[in-house]
Length: 434
Ligand code: BGC
Image (cartoon, helix red, strand yellow):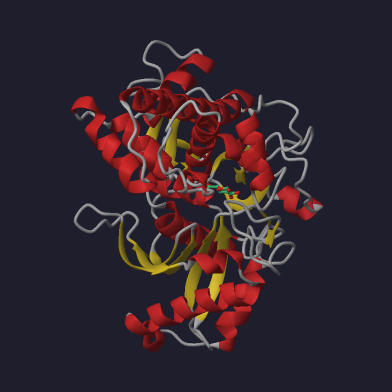
C-alpha cells in the first residue's frame, strides 16, 4: 500500500497545459495535454498531442544510465518537434507529470524510490533509488525547460482521469501486463486509517474528516510469502524463472504478462509426456514466453467453423498443426487460465470495496487484458457480483458497482494530478509537496 500524496478527487474544473510522460511496459509515451475543465471544446474536456517511442527490448535489462538517457532523449525530441523548446525556458518551465507504473515509496509527490522492478524489467541501478531524481538529472544535463511536478502510478492516474469526467469513480484498476488498483482512503489519526502516514501536528491540523488520499495498493505483490493463494506447479515455475522470484505473486497468477506463459508450460508438459503434438516440431513451444496472452484471447474469441483461426494461429506462432482434440483441449485450458485470472482480479477490487465499505460506484479499468480479452469483463463482473453478493446483475450495467473504461490515466490522469498539485500549493495545503 503506497502513499500517493494525491489528496481528494479532482473537482473537474482543473485547467492548464502539461507535459505527460508514461513509462509503460512496451512504449514510452510523451504527451502535451491541455485541460479545458469547465470550458470544454467541442464537448471534450482536454486536448492531447502525443508521440510513442519504442522502448527497445534491451533497455529492460540495461542500466539506469541507459534508461534515463533514452527517456530524456525522447522528451527532448518531443519538445523540439512540437516547438515547446521555444515556448518554455528555464525561468518558465513546462510542468511535467510522470506516470511510473512500478512500486515506489513516495515521501513527496515529486519523488519516488523504486522498491523493485516488476513486469519482467531488470534495469540495474534504479531499485532503491529516487527515479524522479534520476530523470531530473538527465533533463538538467540536456538543459530541458521542464519541471517535474508529480510522479504517479498508472492506477492512480486511471482513477483521477476518470473522476475528472465521471464523479462516480471510486477505484482505478489496471488489468494489463501487470495488475493493480488504487482507491481513496479517508485520513483519520486515531485509530489511524493509514498507519504509514507520518504527519506533523501542524499538518494534522489542516486535515478534516472529509480529507482523502489516493492509495496505490500494489496488490500484485499480495501473498509474496506464498501462504494464501493456491499455486500450481506451473505458477511456481513461472515464479522461479522470473527475474524477481517471490515477488508479485498475485500478479503472476492473473496478469497479461504471465497468462500465456502458464498456458505454454501446461502444453509443454503434456507434450513432453507424449499426450499431445506427437511428431510435431515443438521447438518454439519450448521457448520461454513464446506464447503471448493475446493467443489466449484469440482462442476464446474464435468463432470460425472448426476453429480454423486457432488452427492458423498455432501454425503461425508455434509452427504446430494441432488435431481437433488438441485444439479443444487448448481452448479449455485457455478458458481455465483466463477464468482464474479474472476471478482473482475481481477479488482485488472486492477486497477494496469490503474493507472500505464501498457499496456503489464505478471501477475505472484499463489494460490490455481488460480491453482485449473477449470474456474478461463478463467474468470479472460475474465474480465481483458473487463475492459482493450484489444481485443477478452481476456487476454489469445497472449493478451498484460496475466497471467503466478508464480515461487515459497515464496521460490525462497525470496531467490532472499535476494541476491538482499546483492548485493545492496555492491553497496552503503543502503536505507531501516540496
Ligand atoms: C506494478 C504496478 C502497476 C501494475 C499495472 C505492476 O507490476 O507493480 O505499479 O500499477 O503493474 O501496470
